[in-house]
Length: 340
Image 1 (cartoon, rainbow, N blue to C red):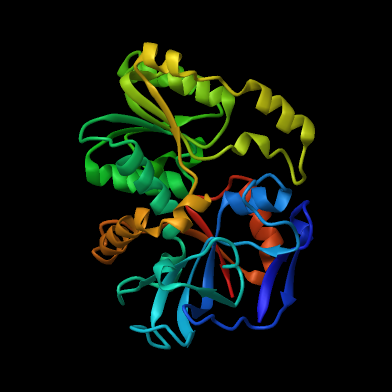
Image 2 (tube, rainbow, N blue to C red; image 1 turned 90 degrees about the vertical axis):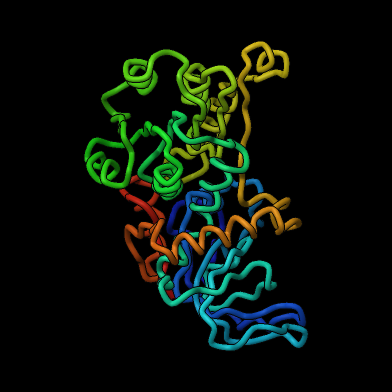
């Protein structure tokens, strides 16, 4: 089988599409023939060497994919070869075949394409978990989404529209019309506008119940100041540490030194909260019951066309370096996929 291998930490050119032996499923596993795999910013960080949960090179990245079951382990029951499935995989999904246990699979209704299925798990699970499991946002509340045009951002907007939130979001001006059509009421051009000033101009000071931010210390600090009493700042990434195509220790150090210290006494006195979500963390794989009900809800919503994963661009797996460069350039709107 062909697998996309991170041969060493570095720029997109370290990626290689290599021939590897097809994996045999263990007794409790199933093997999936991958057709499309999702590309996430976590894959970029893992390639550069800035994702703490990633294996050491050489390794195959990838947290999600979609395809058909093509082999069953001796103890696998209730599944059939040929079934269309969506997969969550803690690495290894960016290959023609991947072996997983049943708790990592979801059957796909015919109304969900394999492309949409590959674009759904990481982004929509992150969005759903931020909004409804950690944030506990309620109808009519005001939220801010940083990097609103990304995969998680567009998922938050769709789920937020269903839940009746008032939403602010940062993105380049060229993407504002598409974001409004998706349901974002207040897009903010991060290149020409100060998001804190814009939110305060429209909603007033300390008016937000929820700030969702994958960026870094500067925006975390400003977002925290926008929170109403009882509001939450939820961090789901640290994109500010990725500077260029290689690991930059000076950038990592400078951003690390700026991370605000939210002591229990401070957040108690402010009546605000700070939290985080990382779908790549081992806790979710050790306790799949934390995610399965949410994933089932998302599959149902997608089958009903209440949500629709946005696929921006599909690259052949052989063009993975170009896909990484494209995602890192922040040109994308929604999800980038790799085709195998």
